[in-house]
Image 1: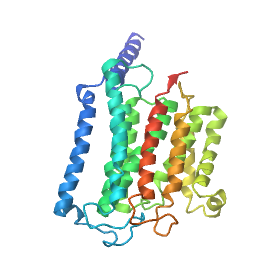
Image 2 (image 1 turned 120 degrees about the horizontal axis):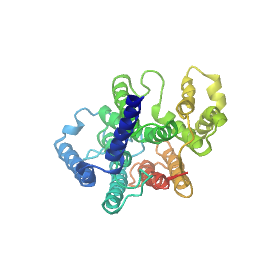
Image 3 (image 1 turned 90 degrees about the vertical axis):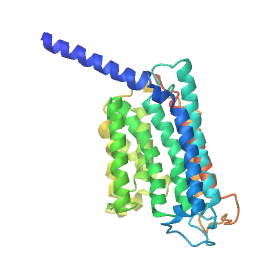
Image 4 (image 1 turned 60 degrees about the vertical axis):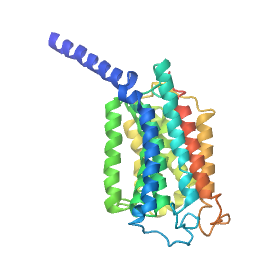
Amino acid sequence: MIETGFRKVWANEVDNIIAKTWVEEPSSIMVRIYFVSLVASALFIVLYLVLALTGEIFFYESGEAIGAISGWCERVSGGLFREPANTLSNIGFMISGLFMLRVLTAENEWSTEKGNVFIGLNKISVLYAVAVIYLGPGSWLMHGTHTEWGGWADNLSMVMYIIFPWLYNLKEMGRWSVSRFLWTYFIIVIVYSLARWFFGGRLGIGLDLFGLSIGLWIISEALFKYWSPKFRWFSGFVGFLVAAVFGISPQDILSDLVEYWWIILFWVPALFSTSRPALKRTYTPWFFLGMFSYLAAFLIWLQGYPDALYCQPDSWIQPHAIWHLMTAFSTWCFFKFYRTERLR
């Protein structure tokens, strides 16, 4: 009995040390993360320009011919960027993520409000901000180079961002440790990156992880807000509403269950959300503003095709570039939304 009690006390002490190290007291490296990210972002741009000037970065180009209209409406340029407006607009993501890190760093230098991991520097807040920053280079490489590896980098950056919200919700409702959350996140990223590289966009199994993750985010957010034992298992049906918003009706799904087999994954949040979250969030205005910005950007994104009504291939005002800027703003809105978290 004494030995068992000692083990429990020791385990609690270890958990406290880990939590303090990983969440409340960032290392000196993490304190410098804003400067490191700023330098890395600048170096990315410089390196890209050097490789573009030498032509090395276009070596594996597989996109449309110079002078043609790209798949995202803008005319293909023979300069440093195959799609200039659609490329440079990705700076918006880097600015958004860097601004997050600057805010978090300043707070850490002054004071950190306990109970909210999005106030001050820690591995969760930094991961979110860095994922936002990488949205910029990822998309930049696709629109700038028209290479298959650039498309891979772009898609990976989107997945690295979009899996964060629903995994973070599962962490809170599943009572996961920080380490379990991080391990789960990076395992998904690594496995997905390899599968996407070798098997293509739908991983060889007809799965669009980015699209699915939008549904998982809204499902898990509904659970976070309205958790109950009954709603836990009903929540998967929220995914059908999300699919309908993006043009996939329940009738489409039910008429071809082989193609839409992935709807069973709508119940992943229910499976892991075993407890009511200990935190509560304020949804007005930041969550709704972020969602409005994203959905409005999606409508504009639909105009970013060669045959769309508002496609002007020679204009610097490109629908897809506007999509980049608006979704960069939405990442900031969700950052502000998470900062409203408080203990119930």
